[in-house]
Structure formats: C-alpha cells, structure tokens
Length: 174
Image (cartoon, rainbow, N blue to C red):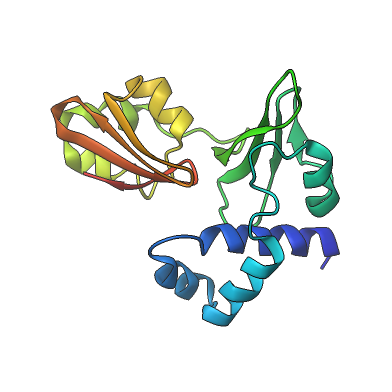
C-alpha cells in the first residue's frame, strides 16, 4: 500500500478514536487502546490546529484529493462517503476549520433533511446517512443554539430537534 495512503488512513483512524465513545469506534475498526495511544503520539495536536498552514498538512498527508482557494480535502479511507476538509482563511492561508464533508460526487437525500423538523424518527435517520453540518445548514438553516466546540458540537432546532455532531457529521439525533 502506498505510504501516503497508509498515513492518511492512520490519520483517519486517529480522528475516529478521538473523544468519548472511542472504544466502540475502535472495535468497529478492529483497533485497541494501544493503537489509539500510538495514533495520538503520531498525530495528536499536529494537523488539526487552528493557524496551521497548508504546507504543513501537505507535508504529512500529501497533496489533497481536491482543493480550491480556501479548502483542501482528503479521502482518509475510514468514511466511504466523506472526505476530510481543511478550511483556510483566504487572507492568511491558515487553518480555521476542519471537518468531514460529503464527497463531491455523492448527495444525501434532500427528502430526509427537509422532513427533519417533522419528527425525531426521521431526524435519527440522519445518523446512518452521515448527514454533514453543511447539509443541515442547507436544509434546516442555522440552529437556534450551538454548544460545544470541535470536534463535538450540539445543534438545537425548534420543535426540540437536537443534533450532536462529531467531526462535522451528525452522530446522534433526537
């Protein structure tokens, strides 16, 4: 396997094993606590740090799979429908945000998103669909409140609809 592809996969595993609930995600990936510790040593605080520049990310992950003037996106090999996007300030070219986004050639069903406000069952269907923060904003608009910070946020909408996002993807919906 190409060394850069392998490094990207390990970085993706590092992201998946971050934060609460990592044990289940590790089990799903066939990894253990020792793997988590090794990945933390390799990547912890290195790439997803506000202010880092593109060159530092490219040095570790290689050239992006796709990019534009403000974003570099990588297939990390752990989420089939998502790329990991590093977003940069247009003025200073430094990192301002990092999260998963839907792959460019894939689209989630807009029906599921527009029905989201009518019931928690439909909202919960957004978890296996891998609904992204951008898709929530496009379909439901800005949430009434946002709490938390990267990589975990809770977005609350009217009608008691609550989404917990992890790395920019809906992880829990009620």
